[in-house]
Image (cartoon, one colour):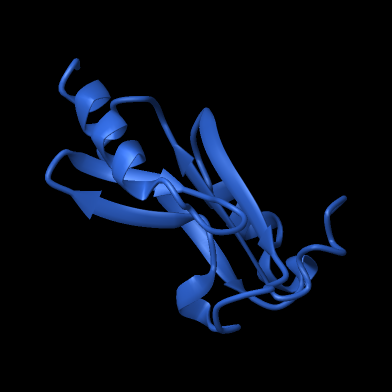
Length: 104
């Protein structure tokens, strides 16, 4: 709620019950934070790890598909990420994630 001024477009939270968890608990949507989250939804976001994101776009369309954090399913498992701005070093980040995943 403290970042409400940034969450005028969309907001989301992804939680996990541990580093090796196979699943995420996700809730995100368009609108103001207090319209997206309530007590019941927060209770469903179980886990001891989480990523939260608020968005007020400066690029990309103001659409639900752009709500963050993003959750993607890869050959190495599920990955959740939230970011602001553009990722200009995606190739080196991808290689780093793959290297680290192969260590586990």
